[in-house]
Image (cartoon, rainbow, N blue to C red; front, side):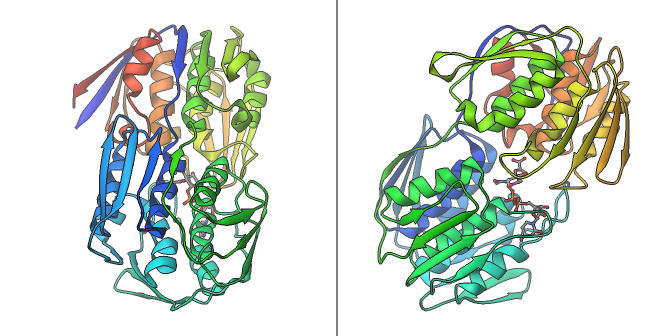
Length: 420
Ligand code: EPZ
Protein backbone atom coordinates (compact mmCIF):
# COMPACT_ATOMS: atom_id res chain seq x y z
CA UNK A 1 0.00 0.00 0.00
CA UNK A 2 1.23 3.52 -0.80
CA UNK A 3 1.03 6.76 1.12
CA UNK A 4 1.58 10.37 0.12
CA UNK A 5 4.01 12.53 2.02
CA UNK A 6 2.94 16.14 1.55
CA UNK A 7 4.48 19.45 2.68
CA UNK A 8 3.07 22.98 2.64
CA UNK A 9 3.33 24.25 -0.94
CA UNK A 10 2.69 27.17 -3.23
CA UNK A 11 1.36 26.17 -6.63
CA UNK A 12 1.79 27.88 -9.98
CA UNK A 13 1.48 27.07 -13.66
CA UNK A 14 -1.04 25.23 -15.80
CA UNK A 15 -2.50 21.78 -15.34
CA UNK A 16 -4.27 19.73 -18.01
CA UNK A 17 -7.31 17.79 -16.92
CA UNK A 18 -7.66 14.10 -17.89
CA UNK A 19 -10.68 12.38 -19.42
CA UNK A 20 -13.64 11.91 -17.11
CA UNK A 21 -13.83 8.60 -15.26
CA UNK A 22 -17.53 8.94 -14.51
CA UNK A 23 -18.32 9.66 -18.17
CA UNK A 24 -16.04 6.92 -19.52
CA UNK A 25 -17.49 4.11 -17.36
CA UNK A 26 -21.09 4.19 -18.73
CA UNK A 27 -19.76 4.79 -22.26
CA UNK A 28 -17.67 1.63 -21.88
CA UNK A 29 -20.75 -0.28 -20.68
CA UNK A 30 -22.65 1.01 -23.72
CA UNK A 31 -20.24 -0.82 -26.04
CA UNK A 32 -22.18 -3.96 -24.98
CA UNK A 33 -25.01 -2.66 -27.20
CA UNK A 34 -23.15 -3.55 -30.40
CA UNK A 35 -20.95 -6.29 -31.81
CA UNK A 36 -19.05 -3.79 -33.98
CA UNK A 37 -15.85 -2.09 -32.92
CA UNK A 38 -15.95 1.07 -30.79
CA UNK A 39 -12.95 3.33 -30.24
CA UNK A 40 -13.05 5.77 -27.34
CA UNK A 41 -10.47 8.52 -26.96
CA UNK A 42 -9.48 10.46 -23.83
CA UNK A 43 -10.06 7.57 -21.41
CA UNK A 44 -8.09 8.06 -18.17
CA UNK A 45 -5.82 5.22 -17.03
CA UNK A 46 -7.33 4.52 -13.62
CA UNK A 47 -8.08 1.52 -11.45
CA UNK A 48 -11.85 1.85 -12.02
CA UNK A 49 -11.34 1.91 -15.80
CA UNK A 50 -9.15 -1.22 -15.53
CA UNK A 51 -11.94 -2.90 -13.50
CA UNK A 52 -14.51 -2.04 -16.18
CA UNK A 53 -12.14 -3.48 -18.82
CA UNK A 54 -12.03 -6.77 -16.85
CA UNK A 55 -15.83 -6.83 -16.60
CA UNK A 56 -16.24 -6.24 -20.35
CA UNK A 57 -13.71 -9.01 -21.02
CA UNK A 58 -15.70 -11.41 -18.83
CA UNK A 59 -18.76 -10.35 -20.83
CA UNK A 60 -17.02 -11.30 -24.08
CA UNK A 61 -15.28 -8.17 -25.34
CA UNK A 62 -11.73 -7.97 -26.62
CA UNK A 63 -10.09 -4.77 -25.45
CA UNK A 64 -6.97 -2.80 -26.21
CA UNK A 65 -6.10 0.20 -24.07
CA UNK A 66 -3.09 2.34 -24.90
CA UNK A 67 -2.33 6.02 -24.35
CA UNK A 68 -5.89 6.95 -23.52
CA UNK A 69 -7.42 5.15 -26.51
CA UNK A 70 -9.69 2.24 -25.77
CA UNK A 71 -10.75 -0.10 -28.53
CA UNK A 72 -13.56 -2.56 -27.83
CA UNK A 73 -14.35 -5.46 -30.18
CA UNK A 74 -16.69 -8.40 -29.85
CA UNK A 75 -15.22 -11.74 -28.88
CA UNK A 76 -16.96 -15.12 -29.10
CA UNK A 77 -18.40 -15.24 -25.58
CA UNK A 78 -21.86 -13.78 -25.05
CA UNK A 79 -21.91 -14.13 -21.29
CA UNK A 80 -24.49 -12.06 -19.43
CA UNK A 81 -23.01 -12.45 -15.92
CA UNK A 82 -21.08 -9.64 -14.20
CA UNK A 83 -19.54 -11.41 -11.18
CA UNK A 84 -19.49 -10.12 -7.60
CA UNK A 85 -15.69 -10.27 -7.29
CA UNK A 86 -15.47 -7.44 -9.87
CA UNK A 87 -18.71 -5.53 -9.20
CA UNK A 88 -18.01 -5.22 -5.46
CA UNK A 89 -14.84 -3.25 -6.20
CA UNK A 90 -16.70 -0.69 -8.31
CA UNK A 91 -20.38 0.18 -8.14
CA UNK A 92 -20.42 1.71 -11.63
CA UNK A 93 -20.25 -1.84 -13.02
CA UNK A 94 -23.97 -2.08 -12.18
CA UNK A 95 -24.61 0.02 -15.29
CA UNK A 96 -23.86 -3.08 -17.42
CA UNK A 97 -27.36 -4.25 -16.46
CA UNK A 98 -29.28 -2.04 -18.94
CA UNK A 99 -27.14 -2.70 -22.05
CA UNK A 100 -26.87 -6.46 -21.33
CA UNK A 101 -30.61 -6.74 -21.02
CA UNK A 102 -31.24 -4.74 -24.18
CA UNK A 103 -28.73 -6.60 -26.35
CA UNK A 104 -28.44 -10.09 -24.84
CA UNK A 105 -32.01 -10.25 -23.44
CA UNK A 106 -30.65 -11.49 -20.12
CA UNK A 107 -28.46 -10.04 -17.42
CA UNK A 108 -27.12 -11.28 -14.13
CA UNK A 109 -25.22 -8.51 -12.39
CA UNK A 110 -24.02 -8.68 -8.79
CA UNK A 111 -25.62 -6.17 -6.44
CA UNK A 112 -22.87 -3.76 -5.46
CA UNK A 113 -23.90 -3.21 -1.81
CA UNK A 114 -23.19 -0.08 0.23
CA UNK A 115 -19.91 1.75 0.51
CA UNK A 116 -18.15 4.23 2.72
CA UNK A 117 -20.13 7.22 1.38
CA UNK A 118 -23.53 5.68 2.16
CA UNK A 119 -26.09 2.93 1.59
CA UNK A 120 -26.36 3.45 -2.18
CA UNK A 121 -29.45 1.42 -3.12
CA UNK A 122 -30.33 0.47 -6.72
CA UNK A 123 -34.15 0.59 -6.47
CA UNK A 124 -34.45 3.37 -9.12
CA UNK A 125 -32.48 1.30 -11.65
CA UNK A 126 -34.74 -1.69 -11.05
CA UNK A 127 -37.96 0.36 -11.16
CA UNK A 128 -37.00 1.90 -14.50
CA UNK A 129 -36.08 -1.42 -16.11
CA UNK A 130 -39.33 -2.99 -14.84
CA UNK A 131 -41.22 -0.11 -16.50
CA UNK A 132 -39.56 -1.14 -19.76
CA UNK A 133 -41.04 -4.62 -19.30
CA UNK A 134 -38.09 -6.46 -17.80
CA UNK A 135 -38.69 -9.36 -15.47
CA UNK A 136 -36.30 -8.70 -12.58
CA UNK A 137 -35.59 -10.55 -9.37
CA UNK A 138 -32.86 -10.57 -6.75
CA UNK A 139 -31.31 -13.91 -5.83
CA UNK A 140 -28.06 -14.88 -4.18
CA UNK A 141 -26.80 -11.30 -4.15
CA UNK A 142 -27.39 -10.93 -7.89
CA UNK A 143 -29.88 -8.85 -9.82
CA UNK A 144 -31.23 -11.12 -12.54
CA UNK A 145 -33.20 -9.66 -15.43
CA UNK A 146 -34.89 -11.08 -18.53
CA UNK A 147 -36.82 -9.51 -21.39
CA UNK A 148 -37.36 -10.99 -24.84
CA UNK A 149 -38.14 -7.47 -26.11
CA UNK A 150 -38.05 -4.30 -24.01
CA UNK A 151 -40.98 -2.02 -24.66
CA UNK A 152 -40.77 1.81 -24.64
CA UNK A 153 -42.54 3.45 -21.68
CA UNK A 154 -43.08 6.68 -19.76
CA UNK A 155 -40.68 6.39 -16.84
CA UNK A 156 -40.30 8.57 -13.76
CA UNK A 157 -36.80 8.30 -12.27
CA UNK A 158 -37.07 10.61 -9.25
CA UNK A 159 -35.81 9.28 -5.93
CA UNK A 160 -35.48 10.39 -2.33
CA UNK A 161 -32.37 12.42 -3.17
CA UNK A 162 -33.40 13.66 -6.60
CA UNK A 163 -32.28 12.10 -9.85
CA UNK A 164 -29.81 9.23 -10.14
CA UNK A 165 -26.90 9.47 -12.56
CA UNK A 166 -26.22 5.78 -13.10
CA UNK A 167 -29.92 4.80 -13.05
CA UNK A 168 -30.48 7.34 -15.85
CA UNK A 169 -27.51 5.80 -17.70
CA UNK A 170 -28.86 2.27 -17.21
CA UNK A 171 -32.37 3.11 -18.42
CA UNK A 172 -31.08 5.16 -21.35
CA UNK A 173 -28.88 2.27 -22.49
CA UNK A 174 -31.76 -0.17 -22.10
CA UNK A 175 -34.38 1.82 -24.00
CA UNK A 176 -32.33 2.74 -27.08
CA UNK A 177 -33.03 -0.78 -28.41
CA UNK A 178 -36.58 -1.03 -26.99
CA UNK A 179 -39.65 -1.16 -29.23
CA UNK A 180 -41.30 2.28 -29.55
CA UNK A 181 -40.88 5.52 -27.64
CA UNK A 182 -39.55 6.08 -24.13
CA UNK A 183 -39.83 9.25 -22.06
CA UNK A 184 -37.51 9.46 -19.08
CA UNK A 185 -38.78 12.01 -16.59
CA UNK A 186 -36.57 13.32 -13.77
CA UNK A 187 -33.53 12.17 -15.71
CA UNK A 188 -30.15 13.19 -14.34
CA UNK A 189 -28.84 16.28 -16.17
CA UNK A 190 -25.14 15.70 -15.44
CA UNK A 191 -22.65 16.25 -18.31
CA UNK A 192 -21.73 12.55 -17.99
CA UNK A 193 -25.28 11.67 -19.13
CA UNK A 194 -25.03 14.09 -22.06
CA UNK A 195 -21.74 12.43 -22.95
CA UNK A 196 -23.31 8.97 -22.85
CA UNK A 197 -26.21 10.16 -25.03
CA UNK A 198 -23.75 11.63 -27.57
CA UNK A 199 -21.98 8.28 -27.73
CA UNK A 200 -25.26 6.38 -28.15
CA UNK A 201 -26.33 8.81 -30.90
CA UNK A 202 -23.03 8.21 -32.70
CA UNK A 203 -23.88 4.50 -32.53
CA UNK A 204 -27.22 5.27 -34.21
CA UNK A 205 -29.59 5.83 -31.29
CA UNK A 206 -32.44 8.32 -31.56
CA UNK A 207 -32.32 10.52 -28.42
CA UNK A 208 -33.40 14.09 -27.68
CA UNK A 209 -33.48 16.15 -24.50
CA UNK A 210 -30.30 14.81 -22.88
CA UNK A 211 -28.90 17.30 -20.38
CA UNK A 212 -32.47 18.17 -19.32
CA UNK A 213 -34.78 16.30 -16.90
CA UNK A 214 -36.87 14.95 -19.79
CA UNK A 215 -35.17 12.63 -22.26
CA UNK A 216 -37.08 11.18 -25.23
CA UNK A 217 -35.88 8.08 -27.00
CA UNK A 218 -37.23 6.32 -30.08
CA UNK A 219 -36.01 2.74 -30.08
CA UNK A 220 -33.94 1.55 -33.05
CA UNK A 221 -33.34 -2.05 -34.22
CA UNK A 222 -29.57 -2.01 -34.16
CA UNK A 223 -26.60 0.10 -33.07
CA UNK A 224 -23.22 0.14 -34.77
CA UNK A 225 -19.67 0.82 -33.62
CA UNK A 226 -18.18 4.32 -33.71
CA UNK A 227 -15.24 6.50 -32.80
CA UNK A 228 -15.83 8.86 -29.88
CA UNK A 229 -13.99 11.41 -27.73
CA UNK A 230 -14.76 11.32 -24.00
CA UNK A 231 -15.31 14.60 -22.09
CA UNK A 232 -12.78 15.98 -19.61
CA UNK A 233 -13.16 15.43 -15.88
CA UNK A 234 -15.01 18.35 -14.27
CA UNK A 235 -14.43 16.89 -10.79
CA UNK A 236 -10.67 16.70 -11.31
CA UNK A 237 -10.78 20.32 -12.50
CA UNK A 238 -12.82 21.33 -9.43
CA UNK A 239 -10.29 19.55 -7.21
CA UNK A 240 -7.50 21.71 -8.67
CA UNK A 241 -9.64 24.82 -8.08
CA UNK A 242 -9.98 23.78 -4.42
CA UNK A 243 -6.21 23.20 -4.20
CA UNK A 244 -5.60 26.66 -5.63
CA UNK A 245 -7.95 28.27 -3.07
CA UNK A 246 -6.59 26.38 -0.06
CA UNK A 247 -2.97 27.19 -0.91
CA UNK A 248 -3.79 30.72 -2.17
CA UNK A 249 -1.95 29.94 -5.39
CA UNK A 250 -2.57 31.28 -8.88
CA UNK A 251 -2.99 28.41 -11.34
CA UNK A 252 -4.64 27.74 -14.68
CA UNK A 253 -6.62 24.68 -15.66
CA UNK A 254 -6.96 23.59 -19.25
CA UNK A 255 -8.84 20.96 -21.19
CA UNK A 256 -12.15 21.07 -19.29
CA UNK A 257 -15.43 22.65 -20.38
CA UNK A 258 -15.90 25.64 -17.98
CA UNK A 259 -19.69 25.39 -18.44
CA UNK A 260 -19.52 22.09 -16.56
CA UNK A 261 -18.22 23.99 -13.53
CA UNK A 262 -20.59 26.96 -13.25
CA UNK A 263 -21.70 26.25 -9.65
CA UNK A 264 -18.13 25.51 -8.58
CA UNK A 265 -16.79 28.73 -10.12
CA UNK A 266 -19.64 30.67 -8.48
CA UNK A 267 -18.81 29.26 -5.02
CA UNK A 268 -15.08 29.81 -5.56
CA UNK A 269 -15.69 33.47 -6.37
CA UNK A 270 -17.74 33.81 -3.18
CA UNK A 271 -14.93 32.20 -1.17
CA UNK A 272 -12.65 34.81 -2.67
CA UNK A 273 -10.98 34.32 -6.03
CA UNK A 274 -10.79 36.10 -9.31
CA UNK A 275 -11.65 33.52 -11.94
CA UNK A 276 -11.19 34.27 -15.61
CA UNK A 277 -12.23 32.02 -18.46
CA UNK A 278 -9.60 32.67 -21.07
CA UNK A 279 -9.63 31.97 -24.78
CA UNK A 280 -9.95 28.26 -25.48
CA UNK A 281 -11.71 27.70 -22.15
CA UNK A 282 -8.61 27.84 -19.92
CA UNK A 283 -9.74 28.61 -16.35
CA UNK A 284 -7.41 30.93 -14.54
CA UNK A 285 -7.77 31.27 -10.73
CA UNK A 286 -6.30 33.99 -8.55
CA UNK A 287 -7.42 33.45 -4.93
CA UNK A 288 -7.44 36.18 -2.29
CA UNK A 289 -5.12 35.78 0.68
CA UNK A 290 -8.11 35.77 3.05
CA UNK A 291 -10.79 33.21 2.23
CA UNK A 292 -14.41 34.06 3.05
CA UNK A 293 -16.79 31.54 4.66
CA UNK A 294 -19.71 30.35 2.49
CA UNK A 295 -22.62 27.96 2.75
CA UNK A 296 -22.53 25.06 0.32
CA UNK A 297 -25.40 22.69 -0.42
CA UNK A 298 -24.65 19.74 -2.66
CA UNK A 299 -27.31 19.09 -5.27
CA UNK A 300 -27.81 17.28 -8.54
CA UNK A 301 -26.31 19.04 -11.58
CA UNK A 302 -26.21 21.96 -12.24
CA UNK A 303 -26.01 22.39 -8.44
CA UNK A 304 -22.78 22.07 -6.48
CA UNK A 305 -21.47 18.47 -6.91
CA UNK A 306 -21.24 16.11 -3.95
CA UNK A 307 -17.99 14.88 -5.51
CA UNK A 308 -16.36 18.23 -4.61
CA UNK A 309 -17.85 18.65 -1.14
CA UNK A 310 -14.85 17.21 0.73
CA UNK A 311 -12.26 19.20 -1.25
CA UNK A 312 -14.12 22.48 -0.66
CA UNK A 313 -14.52 21.66 3.02
CA UNK A 314 -10.73 21.53 3.21
CA UNK A 315 -10.68 25.12 1.83
CA UNK A 316 -13.45 26.34 4.13
CA UNK A 317 -11.60 25.01 7.17
CA UNK A 318 -9.14 27.86 6.43
CA UNK A 319 -11.74 30.59 5.80
CA UNK A 320 -12.19 33.63 7.95
CA UNK A 321 -15.48 32.71 9.70
CA UNK A 322 -18.16 30.04 9.90
CA UNK A 323 -19.39 28.02 6.90
CA UNK A 324 -22.20 25.49 6.65
CA UNK A 325 -22.02 22.50 4.33
CA UNK A 326 -25.25 20.60 3.67
CA UNK A 327 -24.92 17.24 1.93
CA UNK A 328 -28.15 16.53 0.05
CA UNK A 329 -26.96 13.64 -2.13
CA UNK A 330 -25.10 11.39 0.34
CA UNK A 331 -26.02 12.53 3.89
CA UNK A 332 -23.24 10.34 5.35
CA UNK A 333 -20.43 11.49 3.09
CA UNK A 334 -18.38 13.09 5.87
CA UNK A 335 -15.58 10.62 6.57
CA UNK A 336 -13.04 13.40 5.93
CA UNK A 337 -14.34 15.53 8.83
CA UNK A 338 -12.54 13.60 11.59
CA UNK A 339 -9.31 13.51 9.59
CA UNK A 340 -9.42 17.28 8.85
CA UNK A 341 -10.04 17.86 12.57
CA UNK A 342 -6.91 15.81 13.32
CA UNK A 343 -5.06 18.47 11.29
CA UNK A 344 -6.45 21.24 13.49
CA UNK A 345 -9.64 22.07 11.58
CA UNK A 346 -12.71 22.89 13.62
CA UNK A 347 -15.64 21.06 12.05
CA UNK A 348 -18.74 19.76 13.75
CA UNK A 349 -20.92 17.29 11.95
CA UNK A 350 -24.59 16.96 12.72
CA UNK A 351 -26.45 14.57 10.41
CA UNK A 352 -26.25 15.89 6.83
CA UNK A 353 -24.76 19.21 8.04
CA UNK A 354 -21.24 20.22 8.88
CA UNK A 355 -20.41 23.50 10.57
CA UNK A 356 -16.91 24.66 9.81
CA UNK A 357 -15.25 27.30 11.92
CA UNK A 358 -12.29 28.52 9.91
CA UNK A 359 -8.85 28.31 11.56
CA UNK A 360 -5.73 30.33 10.80
CA UNK A 361 -3.59 27.31 9.93
CA UNK A 362 -3.86 23.54 9.57
CA UNK A 363 -1.06 21.41 10.99
CA UNK A 364 0.49 18.38 9.28
CA UNK A 365 -0.48 14.96 10.69
CA UNK A 366 -0.75 11.30 9.77
CA UNK A 367 -4.22 10.91 8.28
CA UNK A 368 -6.23 8.17 6.64
CA UNK A 369 -7.94 8.39 3.25
CA UNK A 370 -11.39 6.77 3.36
CA UNK A 371 -12.71 7.23 -0.18
CA UNK A 372 -11.75 8.82 -3.45
CA UNK A 373 -12.86 12.42 -2.91
CA UNK A 374 -12.03 12.45 0.81
CA UNK A 375 -8.45 11.48 -0.12
CA UNK A 376 -8.25 14.41 -2.51
CA UNK A 377 -9.47 16.70 0.28
CA UNK A 378 -6.76 15.41 2.62
CA UNK A 379 -4.04 15.99 0.02
CA UNK A 380 -5.33 19.57 -0.43
CA UNK A 381 -5.32 20.07 3.35
CA UNK A 382 -1.75 18.71 3.45
CA UNK A 383 -0.61 21.19 0.79
CA UNK A 384 -2.02 24.04 2.86
CA UNK A 385 -0.84 22.77 6.27
CA UNK A 386 2.30 23.60 8.22
CA UNK A 387 4.78 20.75 8.46
CA UNK A 388 4.53 17.22 7.16
CA UNK A 389 1.30 15.42 6.33
CA UNK A 390 1.16 11.71 5.57
CA UNK A 391 -1.95 10.58 3.74
CA UNK A 392 -2.32 6.82 4.19
CA UNK A 393 -4.23 4.42 1.89
CA UNK A 394 -3.91 6.49 -1.27
CA UNK A 395 -5.18 3.59 -3.39
CA UNK A 396 -8.52 5.40 -3.06
CA UNK A 397 -7.16 8.43 -4.91
CA UNK A 398 -5.70 6.19 -7.63
CA UNK A 399 -9.25 5.06 -8.47
CA UNK A 400 -10.20 8.45 -9.77
CA UNK A 401 -7.25 10.79 -10.36
CA UNK A 402 -4.81 10.08 -13.17
CA UNK A 403 -1.17 10.83 -12.21
CA UNK A 404 -2.33 13.13 -9.45
CA UNK A 405 1.02 13.49 -7.71
CA UNK A 406 2.86 14.13 -11.00
CA UNK A 407 0.33 16.79 -11.97
CA UNK A 408 0.60 18.42 -8.53
CA UNK A 409 4.41 18.21 -8.57
CA UNK A 410 4.47 19.97 -11.95
CA UNK A 411 2.51 22.79 -10.31
CA UNK A 412 5.21 22.96 -7.62
CA UNK A 413 3.60 20.83 -4.92
CA UNK A 414 5.85 19.04 -2.45
CA UNK A 415 4.31 15.60 -2.65
CA UNK A 416 5.94 12.16 -2.77
CA UNK A 417 4.54 8.65 -3.02
CA UNK A 418 6.12 6.19 -0.60
CA UNK A 419 5.41 2.65 0.57
CA UNK A 420 3.14 2.71 3.62
C1 EPZ B 1 -22.62 8.80 -9.61
O1 EPZ B 1 -22.96 7.72 -8.74
C2 EPZ B 1 -21.13 8.96 -9.54
N1 EPZ B 1 -20.48 7.71 -9.93
C3 EPZ B 1 -20.72 9.35 -8.13
O2 EPZ B 1 -19.33 9.62 -8.17
C4 EPZ B 1 -21.45 10.63 -7.71
O3 EPZ B 1 -21.15 10.92 -6.38
C5 EPZ B 1 -22.95 10.43 -7.88
O4 EPZ B 1 -23.27 10.00 -9.23
C6 EPZ B 1 -23.75 11.70 -7.60
O5 EPZ B 1 -23.35 12.71 -8.47
C7 EPZ B 1 -20.30 7.45 -11.23
O6 EPZ B 1 -20.71 8.17 -12.10
C8 EPZ B 1 -19.54 6.22 -11.55
P1 EPZ B 1 -26.72 8.50 -7.91
P2 EPZ B 1 -24.44 7.12 -8.76
O7 EPZ B 1 -27.47 7.27 -8.31
O8 EPZ B 1 -25.02 7.28 -10.10
C9 EPZ B 1 -29.70 7.63 -4.31
C10 EPZ B 1 -17.12 9.66 -7.30
O9 EPZ B 1 -16.54 10.08 -6.28
N2 EPZ B 1 -30.16 6.48 -5.09
O10 EPZ B 1 -26.85 9.71 -8.74
O11 EPZ B 1 -24.37 5.76 -8.18
C11 EPZ B 1 -28.25 7.50 -3.87
O12 EPZ B 1 -28.12 6.69 -2.73
C12 EPZ B 1 -18.48 9.07 -7.18
O13 EPZ B 1 -16.62 9.67 -8.42
C13 EPZ B 1 -31.24 5.77 -4.64
O14 EPZ B 1 -31.85 6.08 -3.61
O15 EPZ B 1 -25.18 8.09 -7.77
C14 EPZ B 1 -27.88 8.94 -3.67
O16 EPZ B 1 -28.37 9.38 -2.44
C15 EPZ B 1 -18.85 8.39 -5.99
N3 EPZ B 1 -31.68 4.71 -5.38
C16 EPZ B 1 -28.62 9.65 -4.80
O17 EPZ B 1 -29.69 8.76 -5.16
C17 EPZ B 1 -31.05 4.33 -6.54
O18 EPZ B 1 -31.50 3.36 -7.17
C18 EPZ B 1 -27.83 9.96 -6.04
O19 EPZ B 1 -27.06 8.82 -6.41
C19 EPZ B 1 -29.95 5.08 -7.00
C20 EPZ B 1 -29.52 6.15 -6.24
